[in-house]
Amino acid sequence: MHFGGLAETDPGRRYWSSCMTVERGTIAEFDEHRGVGLIEGSEGRRLFFHCTGIADGSRSIAVGAEVAFQVVASHQGQWEATSVTKLAD
Image (cartoon, rainbow, N blue to C red; front, side, top):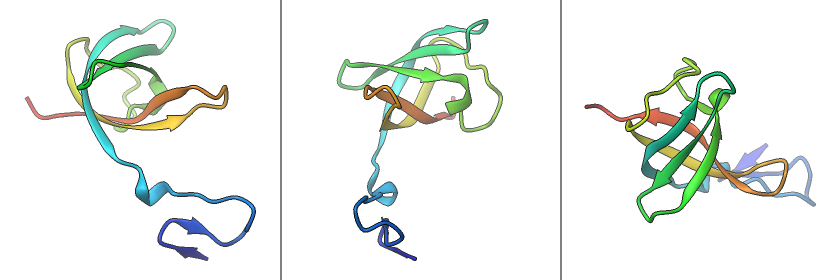
């Protein structure tokens, strides 16, 4: 059962997915062969993203595209972008 983003199934762990904020930025780099890239956020920080994090499922996005995204902790403990969505031109 969920209560405002908090999962009750494991009291020792809390999931705050409904509290994630959406940020905006620009695709700074994207290596289509490797499927990885960098987004430069509005505050100047650069975040890694993987092609599976592109929300429309296309697995490709143009450098320079304006995007919205969420920031999550990766399995390696570093911050990365996910739910990358291209904004309208």
